[in-house]
Length: 315
Image 1 (spheres, rainbow, N blue to C red):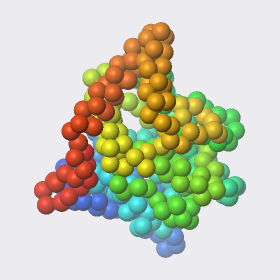
Image 2: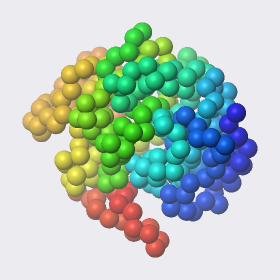
Image 3: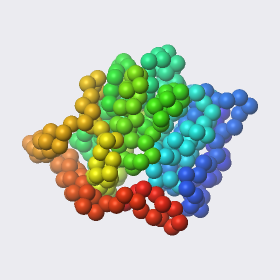
Image 4: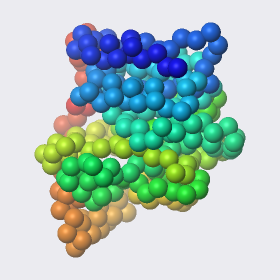
């Protein structure tokens, strides 16, 4: 069983936490657990979604785990690395603090996949649109590329696997050097690239899914994508060698670093597609992302000081 009482109590008092990359409460057992679940969360609450995630972990069919919530670090990659350093499990499962586990077998399916195939270095799940979500969220997740991903019936090599919910053998994670601690965005493509370069597969497993929802209003969605564009500009401006391309569907063909000409033409193609298909949310998001990228490229600085601590954070 996972002891979540202390975790839940700490989440309720999230405003008291001002630490930098603080590790809070995990299950301690007489023997090392098979799985370590690492959840980066800046405030340890995420509008109430983190406590719900912790409760749903208690209901999973697989229970040989420890849960590590890393609080207070804006850098997700650094937070995850700190969690892995403290972990005792042989398998690392990474989750976002707003992930919704839609099945009780998610952990079991991920663990079984890795135990049965040593060639897999990263196993992800599908992100389905919940039928009971508000209309705007369902529509946005349908229209926006990578807003959701289709369910698969067999293990497929895929660029959709993401740290919203994925499993990685700890030895593989350490072998490839873990997450980048330099970039605040684009962590998943960089990690997937390193795992493939090391000779392992990156896959999505069958019949397993989560819900990873967009914000609950159009304004918040556009604001999020403006911020994403701004952070993308930061990465392209200061760490272009760490920026990798994204596929929008399951595929075993990956374009690592397309040129600017290709990227510009592709962006124009996405705008035209959104217009012709009457996908107005997708169109608005693309414009918002572009404006954020332009603004960010002009204004972002490499180091921002917060209090007495320096954090490389462009926003």
